[in-house]
View: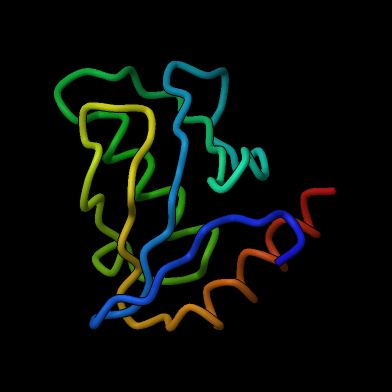
Length: 104
């Protein structure tokens, strides 16, 4: 992946490093931010709203059920690790490549 977004293997799938910008005008995938995928969500960073919005956005963008996407670390931080169950790293990288090419 040319952007260098970090994707790590996990026994259940892959872990994706994400930077979230809450309180945005709309929900969208912005692109690479160093080793992270940068995402903007409308939800505010309170009571888990931005995390729930992130999960919904990533599931929709990657074409997987919402239940297969979970924030596994960084719940109170803009930098998060997100588990995508059922997608090995190679498949997740391919999905991210398609997603980022589509957004250009």
